Length: 216
Image: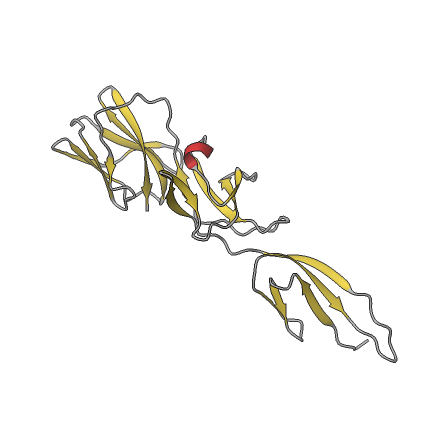
């Protein structure tokens, strides 16, 4: 029949539907949309039709925060996220934060998706490169690296002219950073690195030390 069709949605806070059936998403998650057609003196009411659709949440913007002295990945509003390593489909964990120091066991690129439940997830967030270096002999004379986070250069104090700095790139290769040595200080150029969390390996003679830093 030519009788009008009305639409409703459950829950009501994720989508609005006007009288013409035009839908506007306002929140992420699964929504059940019901199409109904009432009857009149000439026609019986039609059987309602229901369809569940996923309104994908907005892709999260992941940032680095220091919580209790530990650098973690999270979002400004601490939403529930599923965390992934690029190239895999199974989430490593689900929660508002991701701790690379304890949850990452392999070098790689990591990202998050907002999870609205019921299999309804967002597109991938911005990505972070995380490196893991283990089994290194400590270089006790290296005080620290600074500034951290950094956008262009890292400085390492109390090293010899033999010192070098290496990081694992996104393709998995360990590369030596361009450097300049002056008065027991090594300046490392990190401008070419993508934003992410890295482990810098400082090699000085037979000694080495791994130090985590953030490239913005």
